[in-house]
Image 1 (cartoon, rainbow, N blue to C red):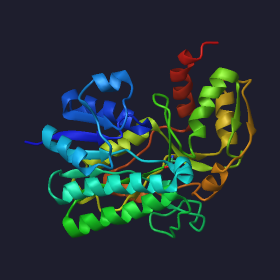
Image 2 (image 1 turned 90 degrees about the vertical axis):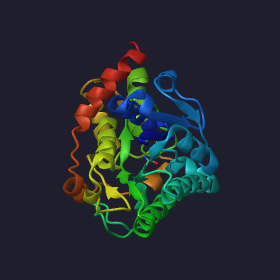
Image 3 (image 1 turned 45 degrees about the horizontal axis):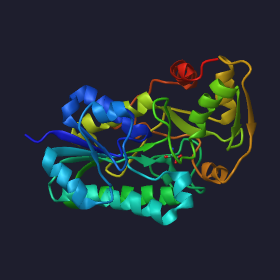
Image 4 (image 1 turned 180 degrees about the vertical axis):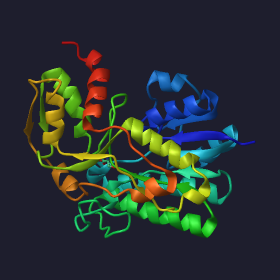
Amino acid sequence: MKSRILILGACGQIGTELTNALREKYGNHKVIASDIREGEPELMQSGPFEIIDATNYEAIENIVIRYEISEVYLMAAMLSATAEKFPMKGWNLNMNSLFNVLNLAKEKKIEKIFWPSSIAVFGPTTPKQDTPQRTVMEPSTVYGISKQTGERWCEYYNKRYGVDVRSIRYPGIISWQTLPGGGTTDYAIDIYHKALKHKKYICFLNGETTLPMMYMADAIKATIDIMSAPAEQIKNRSSYNLAAISFNPEEIAASIRKQIPKFTISYAPDFRQAIADSWPQSIDDMDARTDWGWQHSYDLDAITDEMINNLKSKYPR
Ligand code: SER
């Protein structure tokens, strides 16, 4: 029976930890990691690894056939801040990679897809507090437009061709293993590195910018949970709102100060402020909790503990 998993974008922030978690769950040889570039040695050595450009249909198809892949996790994407600098490149990567995977499923070459969406699907006209699952969506970034469009196509392929595609709208994801790249929520990771290294941080968002956030372990759990749930529980085939906590830079700084009392933060907002200002401050994720039992575990202080404990050996005092 075909039963192997392919991860596209396995060397990225989420892809790295997702690969490790899936290899632990299903066995190293069952999970094929791939990316357009080489990643950390542990990831490349702990199981099969292939260089794949996610915009190249034939390249993905070859690997799908060669390894008898049944599920694809499409984690390759250009995030919000970088896509503002390279709009067409961001659009092409984010959309073409999705169509490649949707079409492989339409052709019955794979059985199941995970594709992440984002809080970036919302825009300045969306209600900011407890943003509902279904509401006004007028995203103002290239990344947000690509994710919203992608959601529509996922639902279309499910309804029209019966494709089993599952998706969640990730908030900002905080992790210590792999650095993020090119997102607006990246400050909430960089701040821990700078707190340990310099005891101070200059933040590219202002202190009051509240955004929905989540610890990586929770994000990985959500991803594996939605993919493991029986198909009939996945009632939403565009993308589920998903929430854990919300905080602003002042609040994360206060949490860090409980452990590093000398830590100071100052503010120099740049173009990413406008992106953050267009996004929700908190998310209503009741559908995910009801349909497939989503629950988060980590609050802000628990995240701070994890981040500082895991990063401190990198920055000896
Ligand atoms: N974390 C992402 C970003 O900031 C949002 O999905 O672009």
